[in-house]
Image (cartoon, rainbow, N blue to C red; front, top):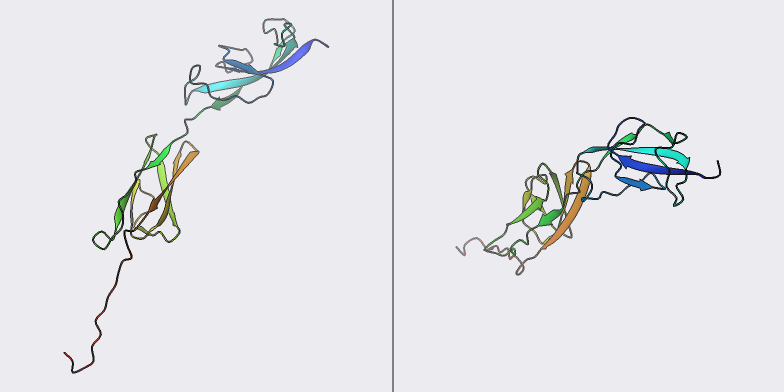
Length: 171
């Protein structure tokens, strides 16, 4: 029919009936709305085609309306990665702790160092040890979602290494 409309409906039912409609769209994409939805809950997107109600929406209870079986989707919260500003490297403190964290429990951590930075020990823990000035990059992953953060580790001065050289007989 010329007055038919195609829409996509986000809802909680898993069959070919719209149960607890949450949102409608002309496209099969929806953004998470924390006022209407919960992370980790299964929702369904159904295509609906039918008569226009006069303002561009499909009349869902019309006998001619066709509703597809919903495609299940879940929204997952995106973690937020943070790094506490570490102390400076110095002769007295040749290593510093770099403390990373995630807004979500159960996250995994992956650190890299650039610009001369060096990670001492594991690069997959929340906290690492740095022994060289540079940029330290943290990637946090949870539920397939990632977030990144970076911090610069600096040095108060050049770390000096000395050696004493003597000729035989001068000692």
